[in-house]
Image 1 (spheres, rainbow, N blue to C red):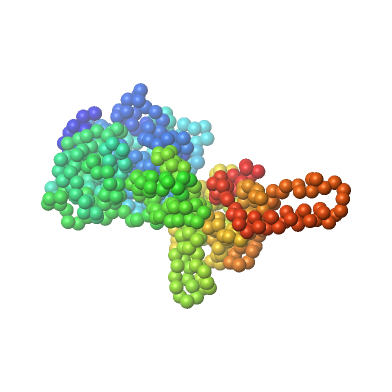
Image 2: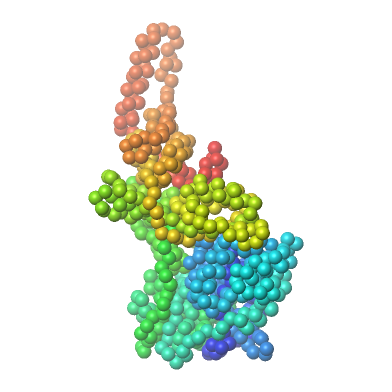
Length: 613
């Protein structure tokens, strides 16, 4: 079975390309582990849990961040087949990874936990698969659990997918029960890839990664023709040409092969170190007698959340740029552009698909590239129209235009929340507090309900998911997608230290929440900024109107210590002298905000504030 890498090309009719989609923690990675063992591509002694999750962060958190592809041999009815399987992430922030994986497949395994049933992200991924016209194989996992209710959830799944409950496969990824039957069904149900073997070569880049020693490693799916080593290739969008040093397959470690044919998935190495020359969604063809029409490619991801990333040590700025470029190669949904801050120096304004995406990216930059970073409070993109008709797009509070504003638009999202029906009241109360509007409600079964809300994105990105989980004891699941924009009464709240605005602490919030943000930030800073020789006022202001104030008391020397008894005028004279000195000091003194205060004040979680107290 292990000789696949040595064969020239596999006939397309023997190839099956499929991926596994599911909600977080429904067992995708465990099912992938069993498939690796069952097909024999990983020896028993080399096997470990979450085999395809290569990053430390993935293994620590128990979540998949990167989609990973692997080639598996499988025999059915005496014929050797080749299965290309892609294990995808389950979190809403990594939907772009899932959408790219679906483009490289003809079928998908829709995995649902037999103890929990369908979740919001399962539905979202299912709709993505339906849009791509993929063959969907519904599967119930974890049937070995005591709390599993396969019959109930098979009906629920059959109702949504549009099949009979008997057609829903039942497996236990942990014990391996039913996994062999699932692979048989993949071969039977998933159509073989279609392409013209004699046409000019065309292959779609669906992922890439940077290797320190070998340069850019590009993952492709061949649609037409053949890709063989030692020929010159051309990237159709950038026009860059390279010589192919190595072509190979992933099974599950990279293995060089003699080439890739129609429908095959593998990797290319050209030795190029410039990360900008391998763009996800680009079409690879031969330099001579190449294809004229590129493949359709992927839609560009739209960042939902923006945050500034700044190195704690300003001299690390070039290293941060290089690290972001390498990370963008591996994570096509990340966008960044340079920006400067009066308080934090040089850094980058980065666009992310959500808060987890932000957190993971920052974590990877610090671990993989050894950087020490400060991230500013996340915010979304606003569109401001002035009274004179000028239009401004604001991704950073410091870009908020001065003058009279006619309209301010904020992005809104369509949210899908699936939860037990007992929690409907708590969910509605939370959504209304976050300015949500109910769009509809459906019962998936007697005790599970789907709520659809339209909500401002700015209200979701902070602590909405945490609040939802705590109010529903962890049973609710959330998925959201962009749904245009709406007019809103938004204001910019500035934080002033001794009358000077500190741009890093500014925020754009709804008028009703401005006072709350101002008082919270002023109180936080009063605790975090060390006392000076003079009194420091901390003010929160909207324009010229101060809405909250806290004062950091001055450190004082007891000048009256030597005055015991005596005339009151003598004491007053000493106090007046001290007061004059403090006044002069205040005029020349500057408030130094320590880096720890920036990190603590800009951390998005309020729980951190409580811990510090």
